[in-house]
Length: 76
Image (cartoon, rainbow, N blue to C red):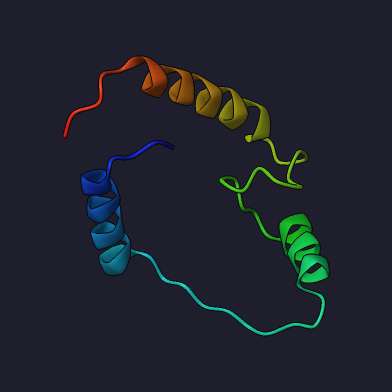
């Protein structure tokens, strides 16, 4: 995703109101991540998630969106 500083600010404001984030400390977080991705449906996380039914479609959509973003003018 490519955002201008103004776009980043809007996204941050939206996340502050809508996103719920939590964490735990783990001595080997990469192992926990792999277990979670394998057992919890996380369709927006493409890393280590090729088994998810939306992986192919979402990968293609993201590729197309990035290409389109590169072609659009930048407004400030």
